[in-house]
Length: 154
Image 1: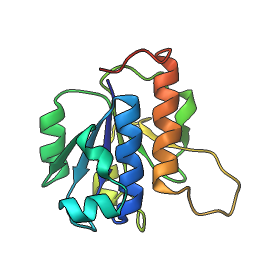
Image 2 (image 1 turned 30 degrees about the vertical axis):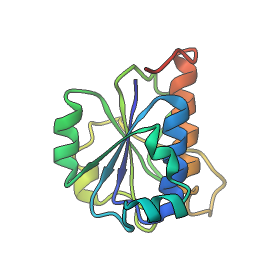
Image 3 (image 1 turned 90 degrees about the vertical axis):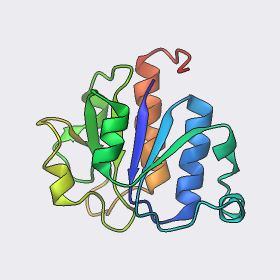
């Protein structure tokens, strides 16, 4: 029902946790290269990403290729400091939720592609940098799913 997109994720355990989240919520996970890790079986198991066997995980060479695969949908970027609050959006089945890399977030060129009002933030105390990537994904996915009354996502 929802697409989670990780743009250039760097830390294997974070991605492993997001894979587990997607397996348990029914979201499709899209990983946009380059990745900061290998997706071979040994690396996946070591990082706790063994849920990839039960999750719908797709790897794309570019964000453009990812968006082409997903097809027409509303795209929301979640970025620290964005003016709109993630909880003020009415999510719809098929929406795509885009998250940037752990060290640098989303590049300006990617943010320029996002429709006005579709760059969202998660509130937090002033002066803090950001939430952990997998925590941010969990917060937004569960809000979107809650709005669907936790309807089966597949």
